[in-house]
Amino acid sequence: MRAVSPANRSDGFLGSDTSQDDGFFFDGKPEDFAWKITGHKEGLRFVDPDSIAGKVVRHPLPAGGWRTVSINNDRAAGFQVKGWPGVAWAPVAAALAKRRFWVLEGIPKDKYYLYGRLELWVDDYTWQGAWNRKFSWQGELLNVYQVMGFATAPFNEHESWWGSTFSVQVSENVKGDRATVAGLNAPGENPPNDRRLPLDPLFFDYQALNRFGK
Image 1: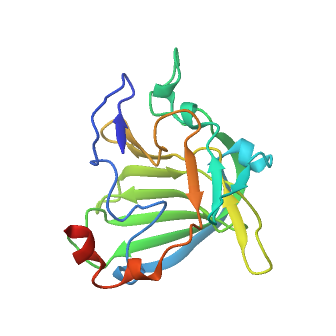
Image 2: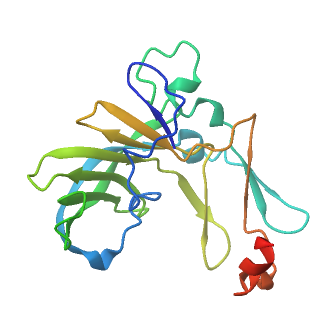
Image 3: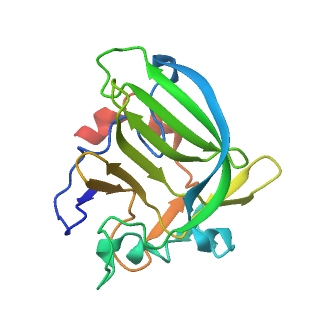
């Protein structure tokens, strides 16, 4: 996670704006919250425009699996673009799309949880998360976790393939007037993103940690 302030770029890696329960959208334990649906409404979300346009290219790998090249990885966020006039954490390569969302409210059962209420906006067609809004126990908006959307396509008769030309999530600290950018791919030109690689079942053996630790 790279944290950048609105005024300048910071090379420090911070996690203060992103919580352990964030993940790619929400990675907490559902049973730790009391949930209810609070709305079904239109809104805007960040999307990968080249993914929506069908420009994601997948190459089969010799030993099995697939490789996707991140063609927009060098301009995912503002601090990567020379002369960018906006905030350093802005998702430059992203576009805005109008979508319809189911809005879910989650109240933590643990009164010592960092936030008093979560508000999750989920695309009602793709079921991809878009916004994870976090409020204090007094109802004040503290953080907005913004997740980029991408296109899906049929992979086989059982499942769909998903792919994007870059990856970025932004955790905006409303009170601190700063943000943490997460999910950026490895540095370098067109870094590969490999998926569905064949793995030796012994890799998941309970003694594997012993072998790798020696």
